[in-house]
Amino acid sequence: MKTFSFTGAKKIVFGNGSFTGLAERLTELKVSRPLVVLDGNLAGTGLGERLSGLLDQAKIGFVLYDKAVPEPPLELADEGAKLAIRKRCDGVVGIGGGSAMDLAKAIAVLAANKGKAEDYLGLNKVPGPGLPKIMVPTTAGTGSEVTFTAVFIRKKLKKKEGMNSPYLYPELALLDPELTLTLPPHPTAATGVDALCHAIESYTSINASPMSELLSLEAIRLISDNLRTAVHDGTNLEAREAMLLGSLYAGLGLANAGVTAVHSLSYPLGGKYGISHGLANTIMLPRVMAFNLSGAQEKFVDIAEIMGEIVDDLPLREAACLAVEAVEALIEDCGIFTTLEELEIPEADFPELAKVAMTVARPLANNPCKMTPEEMVEIYQECY
Image 1 (spheres, rainbow, N blue to C red):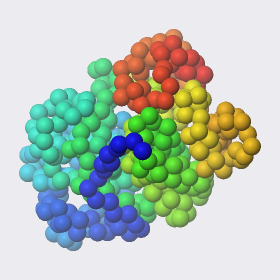
Image 2 (spheres, rainbow, N blue to C red; image 1 turned 90 degrees about the vertical axis):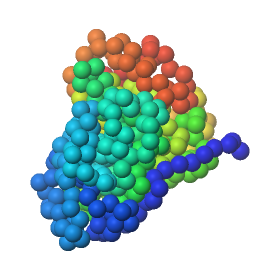
Image 3 (tube, one colour; image 1 turned 180 degrees about the vertical axis):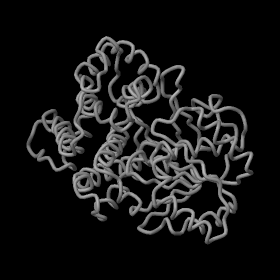
């Protein structure tokens, strides 16, 4: 058995209605004046009012920062940190999808360590602990509530980059499936496939461990069994519970095993064209899986089997190919199948995209098969 380590959020609370205990959780962390980073689309909904009611009732004053947007620019982290410092906030709560939580995590470390957000991009650049932070996901997607990464758009460079540090791990991940019930079908599908992508990538990563593999494989089962229902019957609480649990497991898997080339290839689509992270991963996932088959055939057979494919008595390669077919069917059934052509991505840009993708080095290092820029261009063409 290989030597491995396993890390994650310091505490995880999961359950329907758990959001009502937010004030109590803040008190446990000795946070009396949190900065609440809220997805801009959520601020004007009933969730914003509910948040105010919960904290007002507990006499916890808070500062609202509701500028979180999909694929957030790096400047928002600096702006939010300045607000937290000026208002003397002693903790951070991130509520929303991955973008809101990534922004909240970055603000927490910036507010405590000063400096600029661009100084902390890369691996282990954060000098010390941040403010105590609680992450509350409202989508079953990124798993950001249990990861050590925060990803941003650098507008001037037209690329995505991330902060990666153990200091970004939240003190508490608070997961309430009821908060995902109002998510519309399309974002439910896109974020759900994003979580599936994390699970498949972390399961097939060369850095996977026996512990991460358990979580990643169970995440694949939960998501593949429940995503169709969550998309087409969004009020089905059982499906929403399973999806949020699957997203959590996938997040723990990726935090420990890492992701692979899907993310390297999808990052330039978000950085240059603003394609959402979930959609970019959805486009790239089947083609990268097909490319990786020869490097992890047994694991792809596992994936095919847990997604309901009959693999008995099939040759290994043929059984492994069923994993790709199962993922393609799930994407199509959820109504988010698309191509780079439909998104108006010029074919002439593919070599440039490949060049940028090669700089997203850590996921490429985890990939079960080595990938050249020329092979990346071919994958982009297959997705066209």
